[in-house]
Length: 431
Ligand code: 4AD
Ligand code: MG
Image (cartoon, rainbow, N blue to C red):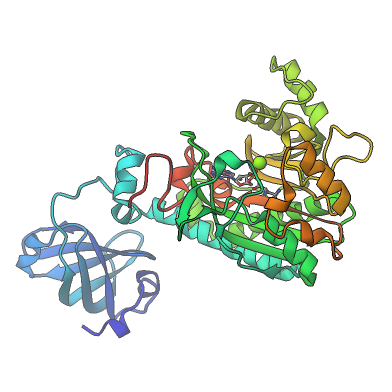
């Protein structure tokens, strides 16, 4: 059968009666009724009923085998009048063994086992839909940044040192030298602002040697990082992040309505995202019985509570928490103007989960050196980082967002592993 002439099920279902077509896909079901047999054929666009008059050997056709089929389109017998294919001929491209190792369409298989057989699991249209939406989110992000004049950069993932916490670095053997997998493109995106690109972004893997067994941590995730020059302050960055979030949700709503319906997810474009001082947030938490000191970070429990409070009080799924304590932020965050214990930083929380961290960066060479010293970091050891601020660097700031967490939050998935095809966590290196 000529696969170059193969058409998608979705298109075939809209064809006029008596059209001759070739389709191909997976056998979802075979119904044997003697002389009149039926195959439900699934491809990535839908399911088509094939009516096979005769073809007794279909009894040997196993579920999930891949076939091609040719025939004539006819209005079906069902009330819906959905078109069917009257089979002329079929070919088995690849038969499936039985039994299948997982129940693709049931919901009893553990996530762990499903990921072991992701190539089967993702044949479930609901699982497939998650990744179609993820793909669209990726496209929306690229569209948005291009529209806003950001330049896409690619930065090294093998690095000599990190700028975030040292404990999260994966060591690798690099021709007898010490090297690490990149835990953030932080240095490089700042470097490229200074290089005159002014606005840059990258969507790329980020590696974190965190031995966390939670529903929101991976050891390899996709970071959506941006950095922009000539900002007034951290609010300039939050304005862009807010527009990005609105753009993604609007675009997904427009392009993925079938997938969202299938997953029974109703998404709303936020009107505006409240920006709350961390001090204010901590006093709200205190009212809920969660006490945190001025220097504390927000833990995941606090983020969850804040998510609930904001939903009630501001009718918002999102909140920016701003002005995190200097104690808990990396050395490159700019300190607040009138408060050396605060920083011009923010986290973005979506339904109680942190999806992004950003800040205005310290671009003044002398002050940056002092801040590094205060944190016990030897700046000379961070290859080339200091130089960025010696030869003309604008005010700048940016954000790092986690794509996997954004997919998780948008689709209200209870585990981040549902949002990524082949997750990496402390226990998992395969498939
Ligand atoms: O909050 P993080 O660590 O911030 C940075 O990397 C900064 N350099 C960003 C900046 O521009 N200042 O990471 C950013 C985001 C988090 O908010 C979260 O969404 C995601 O990356 N993330 C993870 N996602 C999955 N698994 C993990 N272990 C993650 N760690 C961070
Ligand atoms: Mg963070």
